[in-house]
Amino acid sequence: MPAGFFEAVVRPSVFPDVRPRPAQQPPALQAEDRIFEVDSGNGKVLQLTHSLSSSFSRSTVTELERTFDEVRLTNPDGGGEHIDAEIAHKFKMRDQNGDTVRRTYRRPAASPTVQILSTDNKR
Figure 1: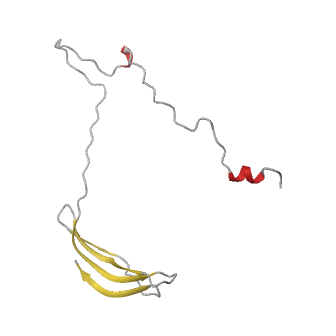
Figure 2 (figure 1 turned 180 degrees about the vertical axis):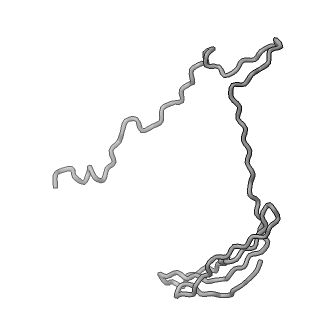
Figure 3 (figure 1 turned 180 degrees about the horizontal axis):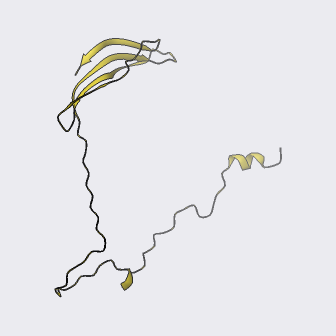
């Protein structure tokens, strides 16, 4: 290997302009750059060349009931470490129109690292 090979690989290169530049003041607006001007009321009608309107609605879903299983997840590396968790698999909700919505998800399966403690708990 050539001399200095590891130094080039291990040491990062340093650039002189690593630090951010100081903030600069924006240039002052010229008369042609101004968006609008205040008029002292000469009776003229203000005419807009462009108009924009927007609206949005938020979907509000309220959870009525959830069905879940309690499981114990053990560390596959051993050591006897574990956590107890609730894994939801059914949801009953009410949407913004008052309709009932149901969602069902796959249940957890027992395995050497997943022990099912209780099933079909409701909240």
